[in-house]
Image (cartoon, rainbow, N blue to C red):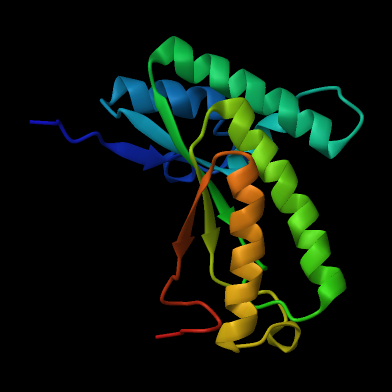
Length: 170
């Protein structure tokens, strides 16, 4: 029988803005018996500021390479990069293209960290609800484009619809 593996989201181990480093979060996950970590972009961004590269993208790539090495050293699986948001219901073609450019960077970060899943969340506040549509065909078209992009990187796309999203707010 296959054993169940347990993972934790990096942002559940403390906020980077409060001084909780991604390095320490990975070590803590291992110390407390987790098999893997979902990497939150806010944690990767927090770690990336320590790198001297001139652009955000190059700092993120350097941070991703470091995270991959550290996870390998600790025998931790990196299972997802999340949450890619402000995308699914976009209606403006220029904004869609802009988010797909960002998604391409995220796909490359997944590649560098050997992460198999790009996780997207439904549109959440503070995005202006006027910029998005609840029209299912538009959301499906946007998601298809993201899926085709992810496929180029051999990634799966995981979709999360929190209860406090714009499309569904319970």
